[in-house]
Length: 382
Image (cartoon, rainbow, N blue to C red; front, top):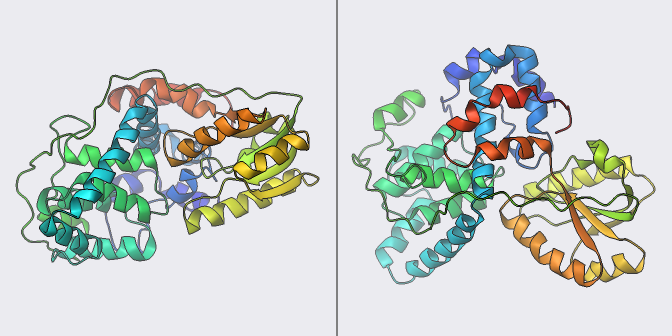
């Protein structure tokens, strides 16, 4: 919240003019730096864009607000095509196995992830990613383009590597942004990194040589079906004893009146996959304990806890809606086991997603033109 208050005065023309400058590690002062918190909804999209509108107005803050909605777009697009995530996971496994049979590719892969490609900007970004877990968004695009078109490496391996390192790693934004750079999201429209542009946007820190001059779009390893309706949330049950399960998809559930109206008798967390997840989950659990001080705290929750939960009288496990990705995969498996124990796994889905996702079925523009309407919808906690 302090970071948002500090950034909001710069979220207008200042951001629009300087947002693509990459000044190096620790010097990303022209962007908000809120993505790790937004990823886990420690702070919500509604809170962020409302603060910017209050400070800048909708017109002056349009560029920053659009960037927030790009995250919503990626998530809504993937939610309507969940098979793309499953196809991506299969493709990553295939490409990892292929490294065992292609020594040249394996060497180039190792050089890339270790920052030994010989391309100055790419190697610096690889080091920054490995050391800090963060890259400027504009740098991520250049990194992906060089990985695919100059180094000739599979985009799936690049996406998986970046996802494993980023402290703000989002399944939809990361996977689909890599597909977009490769020319697979918007068919035939690839993003080709340019050495002069990199030199300008890094204020001369880098002057890469030997970058690809043509974008040879790779064969698409994933079927992209037509959009279908997003998966509906399992509705909450009122008036029954509930266990609140916190996941890294939504870590400010205690602020929502709809959750506060339930009978929350126990708290638990679904362990995350990174140190950043662990820090955020611990913070969320501490806030939930303040909100419900008399509840039982189970801590990390797994299949072995389901029978205990039923035995002590719980009738539902309440959690935040998990969009397509690793957490949704884990909750899907947990739901099957919970139902065997007579427990319902129910979800709270924020209206921010419910309202926006219907406009995310194709390109970004149908969502962008609806931003003023979506912003006018009522409700502070969305």
